[in-house]
Structure formats: C-alpha cells, structure tokens
Length: 292
Image (tube, rainbow, N blue to C red):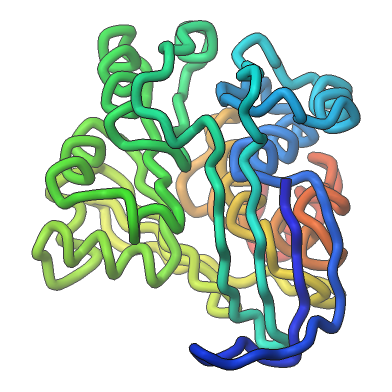
C-alpha cells in the first residue's frame, strides 16, 4: 500500500513542514507493474508476500485485470508492505518503506510465477532471496530483468548486486540508481554496465529515457502528458509499457516509446494505478513518435 503525501517542499533534516495533501492508494512496484501490464494485454503473474491485512479490494482489482495471483501469498501475523512517499511540486521525492514479510531472506521459493513466465522481473525485496529466484529462472532458461529500484541504495552490497546483474538480460534504473550501480561495479559510464548485462534502461524523468545495448545508445523522448498531477509510479508504468512492446516482438526503441507513453497517462492523476491506459490508448500516443 502507498501513503502519498504532497508537500510544498521536502523538509531538511531536523525541521518540520506541513502536509498539503495526503491519500492512501494501491501500490507497490509489483502491483503497479503487473496491473498496468495486464491492462495492456500482457499476461502477467505476481509473486509476492503480503500480510493478512492485505485489502480484499486490492486483490479483486488485480484479479479483474487478469493477473495470475497463484503466488500472491499472505503471511499470518505479518503486515503488508507499505510505502510512505513524500513529493514536492517539482517531482522530487523521498520515501520510507516497510517491506513487511519481504524483508525475510528465507522465504519459500514461489515457483509457479517463474515456471509459467517467459520473463522474470526481479524487483524490490531481499537480494539473497532473489539469488535463489534467479537460479531457478536460469535453470528453466527464463529471461531475467533486474530492477532493484530504491532498494539499491540500502539493501545491496557490490557482490550481491553484481551476482544478480550478471544473470540478467535487462537492468532498469533511474538516474540515481544507475549512478549507484556504477559505483558498485566501479565503472565510469553507463555503457560500462554492459560488461555485466545486455541492456540497460535508464529513466530520466522529464528528459525521457535512454536504452543502452551493445548496438549503441537509443534516446527515447518524453511523451508529454496532458498535465502532471503525481509522478509516483511513473517508472513502474514505463516498465509495463516496455514489456507490452517486448511481448509483441518490438525493437528496443519502440518498447521505450511505449514505456514513455504509458508513464504519461499515470502521471495525469493521483495514485499509481488510478489512470492506467489500455493498449489502444498507449499506442495512440506512442504513434506520434514512431510507427507501429
């Protein structure tokens, strides 16, 4: 669950500031991504651990989109992962996150989602757990995407990060996360990360995005939204659009433009899952930047 707070500015340490607006909404990177991708007609499965307080209406919303919930497991006595997100009018954010049962490294392996998927997206959670998931995915010859998100800053060591990156085909990150990845691996450029993975997707906010592969760098334009209300969840929406293209056999440039298109819808309304586009809607905006 996401608790999103709008502030006039982000506070400095040892200071206080009042909240302009607050709301509670469905969230979490796994829920955001799978629900958005399902809306784009991508067959998705979610593998995650939640508390027994996980809202029934959230489970119903995922099910209605067609998300496979076989591996959405409730842990008795645990609290559902929750994020408290603070945003200013410029789009800067700070987040405080409780991963709930996902903090435990010795959780059972959720095999169904790996076995039934072509691509396994590794998101937020404990690295030692995900090395086990990556081993299973590699054993089954599944493609792996690695997307540690904000947790790259506080739960990863250079060794664990490199282990997962080397098993992955795709690596996703924003500018700050890419910078941390470069520090972990002691490389001077984003292109240097390609020594460890095949494709790096860097989301750059209002500057669009960039996709790096051994064929070179592709600049992806920002698809302008009608308005910007809330940037929370834009990155997850981008990934959903990228996968919608990938699942249809499109090249990296068009996958990136689709990602940018889907993100442009999500930022137009408060909450991460309140303004998800259909495939036809996403394609309509994307066609202004590429032929499909």
